[in-house]
Length: 308
Image (cartoon, one colour):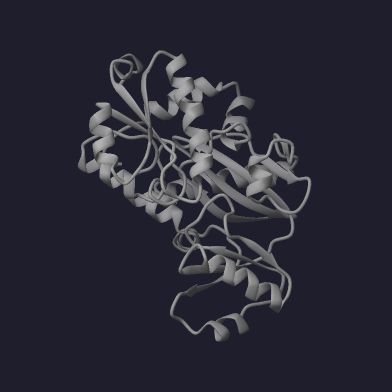
């Protein structure tokens, strides 16, 4: 659909939802709804519940802008529902969404396509825990729930005691746990829109690592844009980001996170619905090349479609 056609439709901005990232999603959704309304679109914000089909029907939704993060929104479930209801939606389709939300499946896909990622081990609830933990090392390590975002439940552990505590914390959020090699280096992120790569951002937290608090609290993190990297490394990161985007099968906007150690790059994960808050990375990267927040939301909306 053209933008003129879209302005004749009712755009449901789906936000909030049921995941641990609900509050961030509300901020993303409100920012998107405000931008689209100001640009002349007919927007209905929806705080997503388990009654989403009724909410969509009540709103008279013609198109869905998905501003949900985490489970029940970024994981393919809402995408599948929208396809059943024949409502075009933004972002990646069912398969890419369900694949990217799972850090283990994503890493396996990256390896299949020859893209570098930190070494890892996987624990699934029901397996022998002590034996698994005893085989993890060397330290430091990163312990992650396999299917959470915004660094929720993630720990950097430096000894056996911290490993046990980090493992228990991750299990609070997921039944599948990823224990990953810790890469000491620069943390960078590369946004891709419809296959076109944007400038790279390096994130430098003022304290600790780039966790939930540092991500979403203004002033807690410094953003270096463009990232001060050697030209060859910069180019390789952008190429790897596009390759990861295509390997997972993304559509619309996505953000791919990396660690850089010297000349080595390591792909961490693929985010299929990047944040659109005042501290979010996708709008920063787009703004650096002259794409305003309003234009960015419209470009994402331009890609709404079925059966991706």
